[in-house]
Amino acid sequence: MKYFSNQVAAISILLAGFVFFSCSQVTEPRTEMVMGTVCTVNAYSDGTTKLYDELFARLHKIEDDFSVNISTSQVSAVNEASGQRAVPVSSDVLYVVRTALKYAELTGGAFDPTVGPLVKIWGINTDHARVPSQQEISAALALINWRDVVLSENDDGSGTIMLRRPGMSLDLGGIVKGYAADELTAILKARNVKRAIIDLGGNIYVFGTKKDGSLWKVGVKDPSAPEGNPALVLSLANSTVVTSGVYERFFIQNGVRYHHILDTKTGSPARTGLLSSTIVCESSIAADALSTSVFVLGEEKGMALLQEIEDGRAAGTKFAEVPGLHARVSAVFISEDGSVTASKSLEGVLQVNNGTPVFK
Image (cartoon, rainbow, N blue to C red):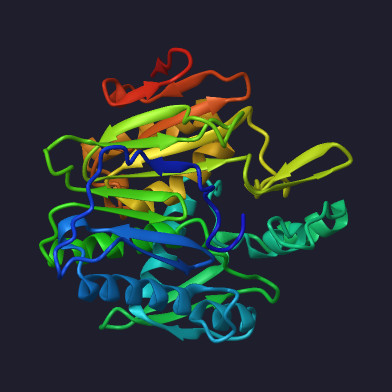
């Protein structure tokens, strides 16, 4: 895991046949480097300069607030004060951290926003990636526990965050891009945009439908040949697709590949027999957190978690209170043997280019 790069750029919009409008007030899709990744928004016939300015201003504000690579960010301030004092934060930061803690509880710690010390010693996707010693891993694991994050809230939604022990640090890379995609979607709705595609480094949100009313086609890369044709194609509207996988951010040492999805139980890259896990739902913050979680849990436990969420949501239990879980969450797993397993709810939505998926 690495800040703002937790999900691989494993998803693409299949653009064949799309038409870009050239009316005087409409501009080309905008692309900028934000949050450590390439971000693109295409609002088609509603894509004015004013709209894109608003959307990307929101992205830059989120980066300024959450980046651990910006010393003046609110999250950096929280990490700097770990074990010492509570730090005032905005309502946005408090909301995302509270949501991250809810997903940590929901997943039994498979998703843990206090993973920062572990991310640092592995250094994956940096120029100092290496296999840390077991002593280093043990020391980092001793600092990871989502229960040691203390929140307080003011009447206006702002509040404070404190990390109980010195050396703890938040890394929200597994959830902030999802939050950002949801924020951009809210702007699109408020501005009455008819259709749009948001691509935040592979975190995809398809808004509305194509001009002719048909569904968008979202492709998921083949882990065995990521530069080739997609392994999966999903036909969707008003949905987000987020994939976690082993094949784009990794390093090799002594012939062993070490990927970026770290298991906070072992302190090492997760080994669950999966090459990728993809979450499909309406909420990008949910998809972001859960794509990592189910990868770490593995196919069987991951599917069991999603079924528990669905049963709980239908029954109106605590799962209904977790942000993003107001609607069905579906998953697709690609295993090391090349087999594909998907939620039964994706029948008729999912096309597999090689082989036949198993729906559960």
